[in-house]
Amino acid sequence: YELEKYEEAIKCYDKAIELKPEDAIAWNKKGNASEKLGKYLEAINCYDKTLEIDPEYANAWNDRGFILYKFRRYEEAIEYYDKAIKLNPAYAIAWNNKGLALYELKKYEEAIKCYDKAIEIDPEDSIAWINRGFASGKLGKYEEALKCYDKVLEYDPEYAIAWNNRGFVLQ
Image (cartoon, rainbow, N blue to C red):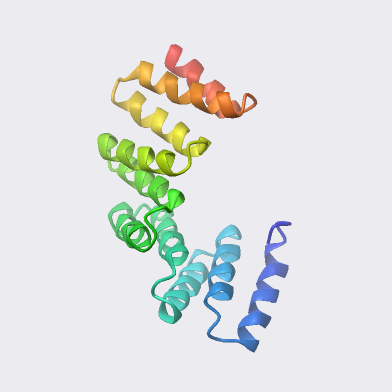
């Protein structure tokens, strides 16, 4: 999976599942690899199986929500993110993903609160800072957006998206 050889990874997960059908981690990882290959229905099936085996598996709730997000089913995605967050309140990625869905629903203030929570958990979360900058810009809070992009550049001066977005705000 880490080598981005997703087809091969799926074969390994399938073998693990064959040996231990109730392995929630293998099911979830297979879902992740399927998602990377654009096999979203397969990914959903894997996440559903994961949750059937272990309904407390926060990653599967988040991952299932992200598929719904990709299908522009934002309200439903938020329900899944909320479940992941309830199970793991320190799950920065789920907070960020919930913010993305709220952003798409044009609920920018609520999105910012989610990004703030992700940043509180992981102050160096460049993606949450970038997303917070986007939402701040949508609200016309350009100085605040600049501060978000500057924060990213503090941690990673090579982050091209931060430079691009900063230039856009200045324009």
